[in-house]
Length: 123
Image 1 (cartoon, rainbow, N blue to C red):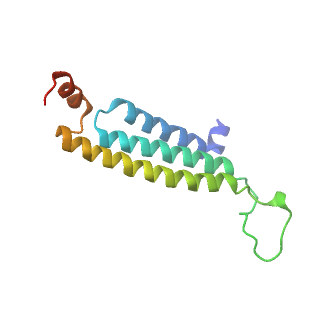
Image 2 (image 1 turned 135 degrees about the horizontal axis):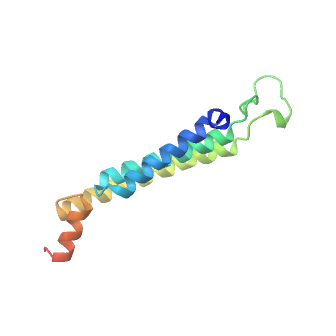
């Protein structure tokens, strides 16, 4: 139990990922699916940021005197998460643009209704 309390960022990110995944899985509304995907992205970013932090070490910004390299946190996980955030924003924008085009074509963003219209050949 003490490990759960100590690693609360990781536990919270796993719970957040589960919420996003269940939203993505159980809703047929495309906007809700995009929101679920964004929640999952945020959970992954939180998890990696939490794993990249080491208690007692400094950020890799040199102010004044240089310490040995082992006294700084590795900057690679942080830079990868910044890149991931940019990619996630781009994918979200693209998904929303596709959703708008789907709405213009079918008049709905509910996947169940779109499937019914496709099966019946509504055009």
